[in-house]
Amino acid sequence: MRVAWMIGVLALAAAACEPPKPSEAEASTVAESIIVEVGANGRILWNGEEVSLEELERRAKAAAGTPTELRFMTNDFAWGARIIEVLERTGLSKSAYVVGGAAE
Image (cartoon, rainbow, N blue to C red):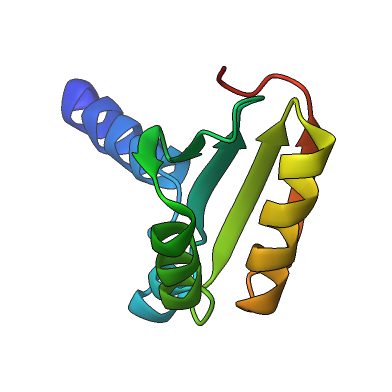
């Protein structure tokens, strides 16, 4: 009897320690993480995949209407300014801009 009681207490304690699961509405507002890197030679990477300036603009427009966390990294101010202009024009402007650390 005492063992059954302890098992019941342990099961309740385990259930209480489990974090709550997000509702469907909360799950749909989780931000997508996008990393845009610009190397010194103008090479553009979108989440590690090399893209053209036109493809960057297309993807940014598609992502602009969704909850998105954008991280932007560059080693080249001239190219970086150009890319920031494209991202802001598409509406993807809530960003964390980081200078340095971009792929070469």
